[in-house]
Length: 325
Image (cartoon, rainbow, N blue to C red; front, side, top):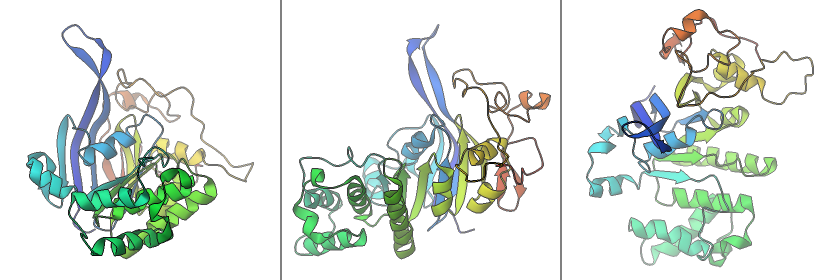
């Protein structure tokens, strides 16, 4: 594996509740000791149910929110130790594609102004070079340069998301967080945007953290997949391995939830609700819903351990759940 472009170790994040404890305001843990790495040009898929901490992790690695503890290194530099000026320079290399294509664009600004804002911030393609760069950006995302003078309300959701992607790549970043970038789109438009992201990765070599709750979408675009549950990493592995031979019971449950045309397909069905992050089960946080739970599961929090050359799982079980869908 190539040297990591982004490396995260021991990341923790919590949010204050509206109620105060005996001595201080209590907090809700959202991320717990999360480790991840992304190589140059790699797409890492991040999947899990709502409330698992996916978007919080994406914002934390971009320094849009501050983590409680842990290290975030980009290209070998610890982002926590950078001065405001140095961090501003690094932001050229790290960008985000937002989930909602309707809320992420300023309705008062033309597409020319939206794209120019990022270029102005980093003083790129100034003067006579600007118009050529704007035309190039729209062509890269499959839109006509004639659209530059239009306002966001004149575009469909899929077109708006393409504009959002153009804005993200305008400053030639090396790393992009795509936070549920296709979840608000129709299925046919989802495929177009996914193909666009795959093409851009191929042409520019950009690394992507692709966040989604849909494992089939994640598999399509990702090299590796990381599975989150209640703020903890359950499993990491190659996308096809995760999909066709899940090692962790939670991953198997996500695969089972995918639609299928086979009525006789054996599925893993979970019972109960996701526990409160304030009071999770002892030991493995998935133990209260796991069909394979054992007494040992409550004894200690299972650590993420290597079970194959490219596979890591946080489960005391040694066997891979082949064929469980």
